[in-house]
Length: 181
Image (cartoon, rainbow, N blue to C red):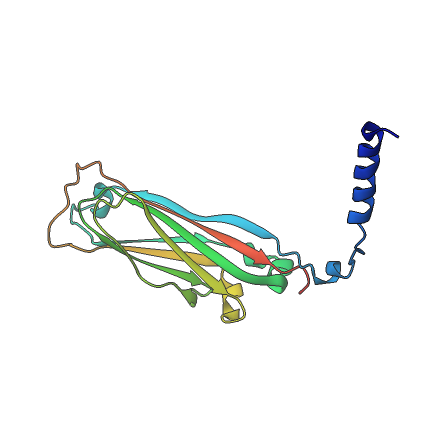
């Protein structure tokens, strides 16, 4: 036999003996499916003119309340593991803001209070993330609304109502589900 015919036979032999290990199908028992769903929660923009009431007096704070009914779904309530909460803020104003975000139940009682957020003046790319473990805060599944409270930090200096600067707020939640729960 020539070397030319032996080489492919040799490689076939190596392939056959290299795949000898038994397959372990018990690994499938350890597999855990945890799907993730992302939901938008609140989005708004504020311009300086919006901090003035109808009589022309400057106000220092704004509040936005948004319905968040994802936990009305029985399957999600039963199998929820954790919630990843994400906020992105663009602040074009020449002053900072303090933001407080609360999850509320139907009676406007807090189910979870996030830590206070401080956004510096002219910060165009502020990010905030917080993860809520449901096992540590079971009450969070009673959330029906999200309240966002925005306050101007330096209210002593008046705003210019003709200014076109914007404060943009975006938030979303990533819901982690345990299918084996």
